[in-house]
Image 1 (cartoon, rainbow over the protein chains, first blue to last red):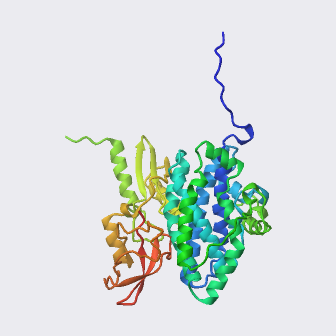
Image 2 (image 1 turned 120 degrees about the vertical axis):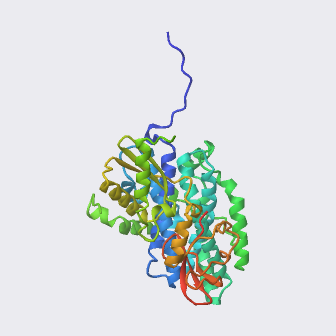
Image 3 (image 1 turned 30 degrees about the horizontal axis):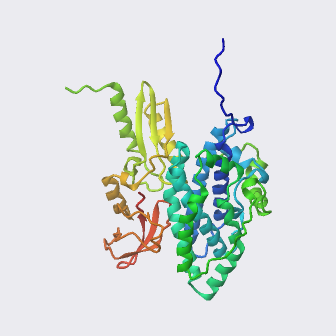
Length: 264
Length: 171
């Protein structure tokens, strides 16, 4: 005699753990931005800001490592954090387009950082309160650091916007170029929507009011009118990247590609 | 009457040894002063030490783990596991009073509790009245929130004009 089993929804076998692609996306995002910021090392406009850029890069790299370690465990296929960072091609990267954009001048770097920090800060606040204990602990750790980052990039938005004619003109150019990439951060992919429905990922719509309030405050202080850009360029989180990512990965992955399996 | 088990004695010995392991970036501080050792557990010959990073990307963490391993190995503790714990996240509240005194003597202003950069809308704000570790004046100003390592900010004294590191409050 058999007892009827209750119906259990089973996740597709290919992605055993539905969190894996999302954690990988978080890892890629922090790693790619960390790498971009590290390109400033030794080239910053003044020593103190060179140090600031390197500090932020290091925080993001640390955060990325925590995510990659977790992603490797979730995947459970024997890949390590290094395999995930060094041995995947550009199309498998899941970072949003914003963070792979080139540094440009200091104003471009600041606008990119500000748009990211304003999202990152609120995202970490949400993840910290989330049901996944591991993600919550990484977020708790990184939120303290992201607070410094957002303060720093907000202050520089204001200095550049309300600074000299030169700084203002550079900031305006950077805004015109990069604003289109902001929307992707809060536009959920199919994976993100599914995880949001399960309550594992914060609802991005719920993050928007706080993000918008801070944005409005900073732009007002910077005397910069809020750009009207309903258009959001999407793609990175689905693996459709700009040409910039390939060049970045060529440098980032050079050592492992040239000497496979190399360890320090 | 107090009975002390062998495990408790071993544990006490390990805490003693950990006091001798210093932070590679701030060698005047032991890892206990910094508050990054969260737990020591002994079960038979198995020893486990739980540490927590100060900042996510702190490059000193792997060096510290190696130093702990070497120090304990030298005393014959071969079955050692080091755990890395992220939550609760490290805070400067865990820094010992002795550690704070040693920092100032070394030329780094110790953290002032309750002055963490917690409010992102408090732009251009700064930690209040950081005391110059050299001339002890509180007439100082923040140069940059980011210093020579992730845990420090750059300050300058307005009286003796010396630039100095401030171990920023991280709570």
